Length: 130
Image 1 (tube, rainbow, N blue to C red):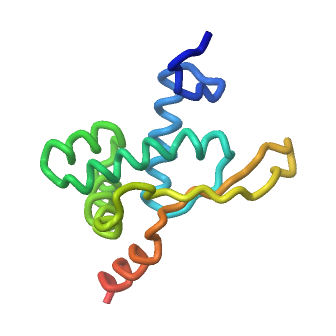
Image 2 (cartoon, rainbow, N blue to C red; image 1 turned 135 degrees about the vertical axis):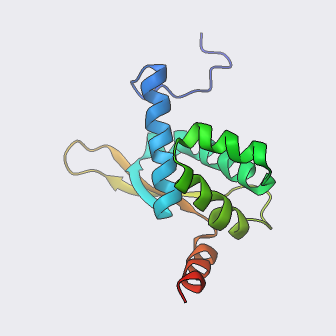
């Protein structure tokens, strides 16, 4: 029985699953929106929201925890400087999953996962360029 076994395995062992979710989280932070399968998007959402919660805390320990998970200092910097300030007034629900339909090749259900405050991040990045 799978009582209290919430983790979706995604047909991978633990180390491969962690690497996959780390890479998906990095891509989401870097690009703001990614297209992936629905199962991977649903598995990514709790991890991405925990990263935003860490970034909203903003202290040194939270930054080090984010770098330890993401393994990229520049992506962690973007998380703390762009994503977290855009979500500062929100209590949760930082990600949005939009279903797209089936993929042509294998009929896998596809989805977009994006930040709910993506407009605020776009405005902030435009202000930085000026």
